[in-house]
Image (tube, rainbow over all chains, first blue to last red; front, side, top):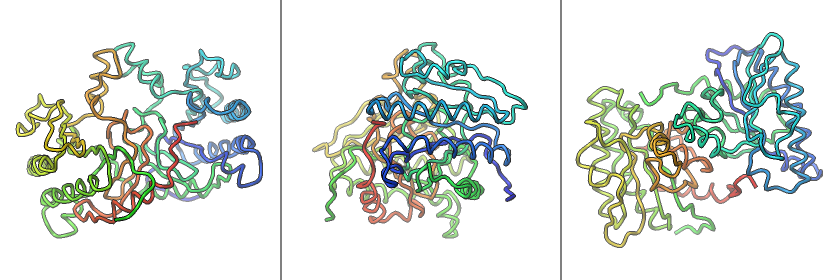
Amino acid sequence: MEKYNKIPKHIGIIPDGNRRWAQKNNFEKNEGYKYGVNPGVVLCDLMIKYGVKEVTFYGFTKDNNKRPKYQRDSFTQACIDSVNQVANKNANILVVGNSNSHLFPKELLPYVNKRMYFGDGNININFLINYDWKADIEAGISKKDIREIMSKEISKMDMIIRWGGRTRLSGFLPIQSVYADMYVVDSYWPDFKESDFLDALSWYQDCDPTIGG
Amino acid sequence: MEKYNKIPKHIGIIPDGNRRWAQKNNFEKNEGYKYGVNPGVVLCDLMIKYGVKEVTFYGFTKDNNKRPKYQRDSFTQACIDSVNQVANKNANILVVGNSNSHLFPKELLPYVNKRMYFGDGNININFLINYDWKADIEAGISKKDIREIMSKEISKMDMIIRWGGRTRLSGFLPIQSVYADMYVVDSYWPDFKESDFLDALSWYQDCDPTIGG
């Protein structure tokens, strides 16, 4: 097991590139998502092993729902399967997103805005499901308190790892991402390898922890 | 002049690495900032030439004020000089930040929250001065409207270019940055070269403009 001086407390994961992976492998676009479930499970095991205390997966957004129904059905199912599988990992699960919509999977309702504790509680695992950054902040606005945003149970992120080569947040937790260091993996999420995570940790060792000071 | 199919409408600039540049060149840390003024002027000329419509410079933040006074004095003066110099460029200037503090330079008060128009108005140039991302959003919260944030006159950014090798937003306009593609230049800001900007534009050609769809 590699040794690192600094382990980020909270890592954000943007598992992008599922459709591009599918096309590259001559599948229909929507077929990529189901190959993205197991990488998330393996990654959670690695995070527990290396002592990461919290992880947030960018599941799907309100904007993603503009895609064709056959794709929506596939990414929604992949999210349900992901949550169910990591709930077996002695993890504490929280789902944040607009659960009042028919596009929110009812299977995940038990986890919405209320963390569910399993076993030893090795790690907090958050999923953004039918999430919208604007609605997140507007929840705080309606209560006149920035501490009351929809994602208030999610702590600030130290690092964000994005697969699929793009270097943008795409609306991923604008409040919690303000000081996060962003590491981009060029390969697509279904091609996840353990070394992607270890390379990200190595890179993080040289990141500067100052907050403007 | 290079040809590009896509020109970002609004580019955010994080001119980082001034102190590291100074140390590399055997100056005192604070000496770097004054070498960061001319790069901003040259960059504005380039943006006008290539048809960029808006640019926002990350000047200094409330958190930066935790630094020693001799450094504060230097970065504040560099910001004043930068604004004065680009105001000569037929540009429309806006300054956003907490102007009620004694750390806000009085020379920039005429530009606060009210864009000043010069000459032909080739480009909108924004500077964040004594800025704080939390205060920015809290202005919207106090008015119960996300459209009333302190930086409401600044449009969403299409691309952010950060000098100095780091890959984080550091609190740079959390609302306007949600869909921005981030391009990182490893060299320090005072070592700015025209090719940094042209390389960023080339890179931008392959960025995906979709917003979740």
